[in-house]
Image 1: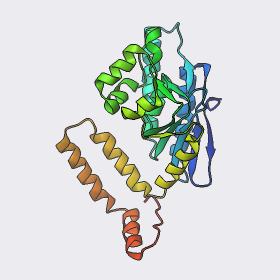
Image 2: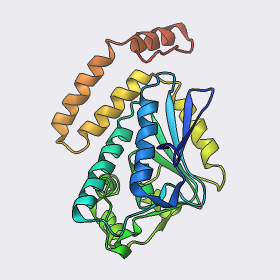
Image 3: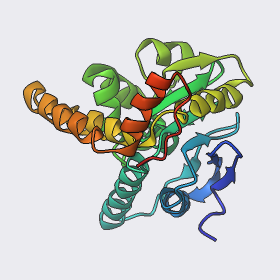
Image 4: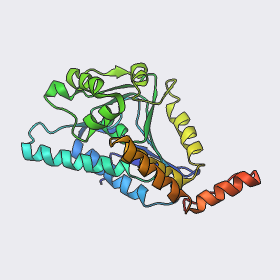
Length: 255
């Protein structure tokens, strides 16, 4: 079954927890197929307001890379992996990675495709593939460089060393640090708060940030201008403004 390496648990507050423990004996393609299957299912469900990706302290999204793969096989795996990461990145709902333990290799690539990462102080991050003559293959080198800069990304890829959560927080890889064992609950609390906001504005805002990040500032600001104007055609904007005037909690519909 494609979902065997990746399970989902829907909560009453509109949040779904996608658990991606992976399996060190599972192939990367199997793990990616499982994520693709679940992400497709979640993106089509309007009742789901936000997604939390989580894994056990023993490791997030563990897998193995086929050592007998040909150049063609490797190119196909990379293309598929990148497709899955774009699917996750464009799921249309706020998506947070909550990391308790090691997050390396494919696990870090998956976490980087989320909107942002929160982590336990016991967590660690990196791309150890260099020890096997490999580099990231699902877009991780590019997403990490856009997040922490080229130099730090090269250091992590070239050395293969894992960095601890304190260092990951310092360089901007993760947004929040939590005590060991508390990350998932606090991430769910944060996501629940985010999900009280306009789903429409969250979706548009996320798309603008992603689209404008690596283009020139003037063009990016024009994208923001047009997206801001588009908000005024939505029910959520009218409801939000009226709720502010009425001094009540808005009832957003994502429309």
